[in-house]
Length: 391
Image (cartoon, rainbow, N blue to C red; front, side, top):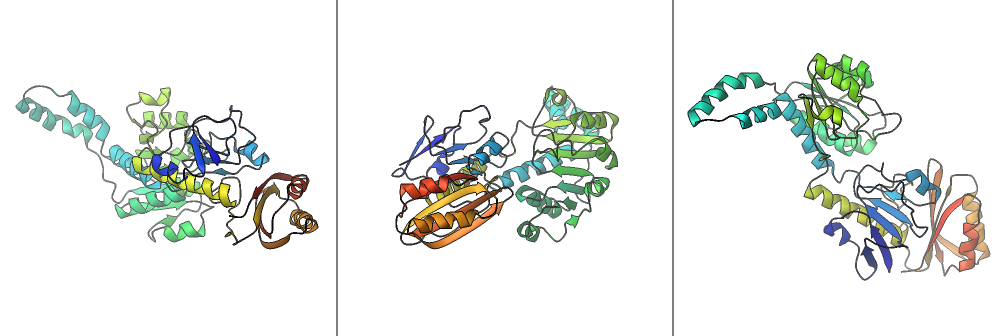
């Protein structure tokens, strides 16, 4: 019986992927095998040594001490793409709200009073103050072409916008998903210099903090819109506010409001709604629950932010051992030697690496004794060893 600790409410559809005959899901446990969460901040949490995996039902993992978990040999899983459609739709909503002055127009309409005739007269007199523009033929720059950025780019292109994308790390798989109408920017300056609107879809890292700054905003077309549903900090808010006041920017759509931004008439603030749909929450929970279950039961790694992907089908008999270690030479050799001394034949082996971390899955004929597991743990550089008995 595996114990799964939940630090936030997780969709029932996701938790249903963890069968009750093998999993105990609880909000209180001192020795859990894995943790599932959404927005709970774990950095100050005393994470039990029993934890073998952490699953974030969402994309960002800023609330999880990933580096600390890596040092302990604990994979951190997320759910990339599971909420992509929800975020895409909110980006489009933000672009439409900005281009058509929907928010101030709604406030104006809500302020009207009087008879129907008086309201009609006021509407006709006031609507000229909210004349906007159409998205069609405008240029949208999309920074980051991952699961969300691709959907935003394709949807905007379908609406008739010219779309320019930039992502130096785009995967081959994602590149195949892009509409052939999407143009590639040479660099960020090239993208900003063409854009009537920019939507950012990158994680908040040292390299992306302040990515949207005074210099790049100055390159944009006058009256441009910036949409940031990714993370606060990617845009330099002081530079954005100055550009809004000068008229260089026409609108700023943000999912992470601050005291400085909230009262500005050209700022459209959402209360972190990007992934807040029933469908997105269910999709994220299902994806991360499946990934944690696959790791707990079979050692399989999919969509980990700190471990390499590693998928090897289970054999029909024998035991499985998984080893996480520092990515240094002769690790597989030392592991093989220990198993050979224990009289165990390796039936199958998979070794993958990612940066400073390597991960090995080994199926052996027979049963691995505790003494062999202890020997594996004692190899210098080994971070974690798990013994998965035959199914």
